[in-house]
Figure 1 (cartoon, rainbow, N blue to C red):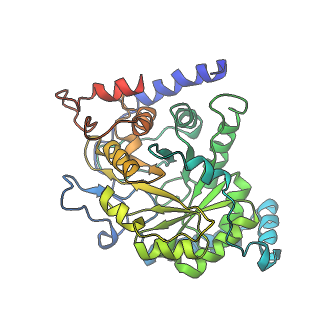
Figure 2 (cartoon, rainbow, N blue to C red):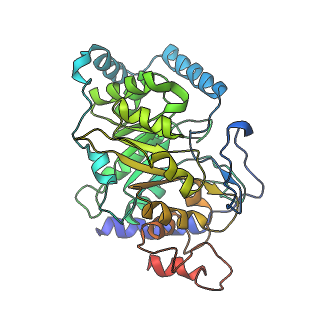
Length: 368
């Protein structure tokens, strides 16, 4: 670790430690009819953690936002990237790539291990979470130094409170670690993409990958956006909520799929269990961990189960911020715990009473 890293890390942890909790619930505008439903064995309700379970009205709102952005005049650099997309011949990005991209390669680790995508957002859902999220320059090094594989920025102001400026800040901070160990993490633009200009904005901000939600835009647009992103050298993570969407995404060229809006490890696994991948191609599977509306740490256990069921990666968002004033359960500790090679057969991180093997000290032991 460099001297600069050593200096930033205690400052980041100090800031996290003294961040206060919210006194009242923060509710998402996502309609209850499309929110994920907890499986019967789940003790506590789940909240959505990104742009997965979204009604049509939210998509329309995003389309209106994009129109407004275009009317106000995108930057010359974004317009140049958009022109590059529009001018690219169809065959330039038409082939379903068999080459594993940088992001996919980093997320796909050896069997029995799990990689972590830490999502940054300024607005949280659910009760008992932090009232304020620290800025990118504070949390970015924490994500990196405690073992995240990539960082996502929820670049939708309605649901995540972030903008593309936050992507730029995250990318700039990660680049400060160039030449260090660990080095810079790739940054993912997690936006509700409804137009290719958003892909151009993501590339302009320095993102390495974008997310596309199958249930919102449909198969045809998923295929188009994968090709658009490939023209600019970006990878695409396709959010899916059903086995049908997962297969459709793979069929049109997706190499990374994220199971989102589905509660419980078993239900997530059912989405990818029968996935048929063409010969010569590999597909990285991500499980999006929904945060629970309690102060337990069931999300860590779910990450372990998803790992054991064969998922390559977990995407964690609100759960990172549930215990921000706890010195052993800050975002970095949660990431480190999810990466631990522990088994739910012998350990459980979710009890916080101090009794049994699920005691809160257990996360501290993993962190150390």
